[in-house]
Length: 220
Image 1 (cartoon, rainbow, N blue to C red):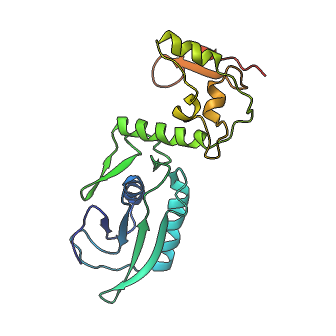
Image 2: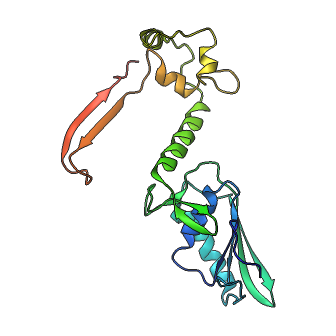
Image 3: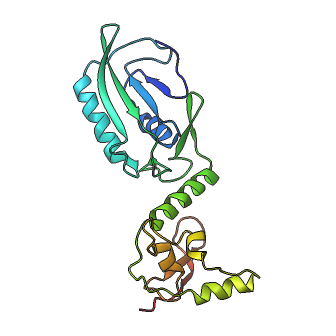
């Protein structure tokens, strides 16, 4: 077999770090392929229980990775050098960053393919991808109220020596594809049914609450 590449990973057997490789390919812009039953040198070892391992792989991908990656992978059995191996093909996911569920969306649970290795994703990249995913998501949701006003937003812009022209809704991406106000517009409008609660803790264990405020009290 050819050596590993940026898009091909070999696993001699199904081991604990399988999800790590899966997440790295889901986050990689080209996706990738994992072979189970081939060692790091490219030597074909084979898989003894191919049907059982294929079921385990599907179950682990379904339950151990967030967001859901169902529909983004294909599992198949192949015969190489007269030995059974498993081929898992991953597409590049559309809801990046993907991460290992039990480890969370952090450097410990989020990975990206770098060369022939799955490397921890830097915090800045995690935050950037998550912000983009969230923005794209609520940008596609139609506002429950289409009679929105933006006087407070205009005042904010005037305070910054800027003006909102007639195309501001389009320029600020406040419209769905069919030209309706989206949920971003709803959150920025003068009146909506949503408020934001912010909690501040002393330390990282979320035990000692030092501040608990609510902003933008909902007005219906």
